[in-house]
Length: 334
Image (cartoon, rainbow, N blue to C red; front, side, top):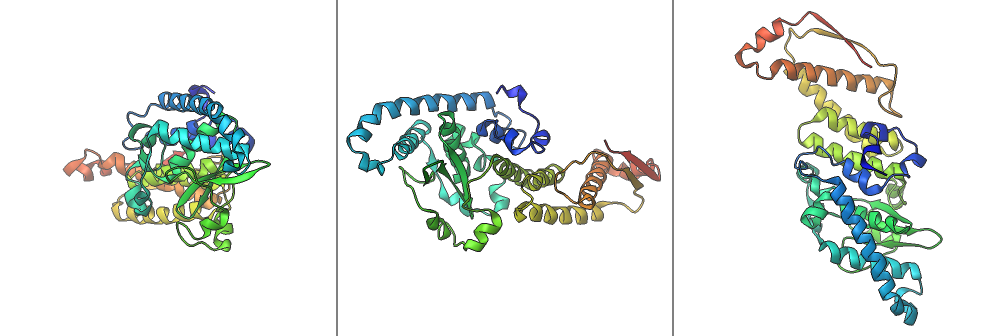
């Protein structure tokens, strides 16, 4: 699908599972990176072209190596699909010369989110280094171009892919070579995880297109909030919650950030700040979000923009600028 036909992030956040499943995972992933700090040179068409070329190389290499499978199928667990996944892994890592830096997973979120390339695929395509998340998206993007039923799977602080059709097996993307571990392996690595925790957060389950987008939006939100763009960052997390309302991580992070945002705005709001009255929009801005919380986000967003407008470039005259404001401001939200 041509780039110009991909909806905006806000529109994507309101699409159904069937609608989202029609889009290229790579393009959706890279669109979630657009506009983040350090992505000024992001060239999405070029990135997609690289993936197309890689898929053709995988196709050629798979055909070239087929005699090895036919001669010794036991080397591939007597599975043509395992053989295909191994060829995919070999070509992807050789083509992009990817260096997997697992130490990046140990960074605290506030440090890791400072560099969007840690979370989004353009870092791999441009710098050949990244974390498990963009590597897994890369595998899935190339494999799906070949019709492979590859799904993203997440666990605590890690992501891998799964061949998920009549035959089902995992593919670990963040190591050299090819390796397939059972689900039980990820209950102990990279961190201990109980089956109850896995169920609560949706870990070790094949992700849907809706869950994929929610994950990408959540990481976009983290990058934006670390860059002090709270309104857009929290908005992304609320979109993520709307897509996956059963995942407590998204709404929990949004609520925590909104609490800090509220406190910060209160501390920076002068006593002579006007009374802001809002005519609430008739159309919801977020799915599966209580109206009260949506209204609170809108109010915080409006107040922060008024404060920014009044303080920017005001210098010593900031008091004068506020004095020029009316006692009451009526805001109509569409």
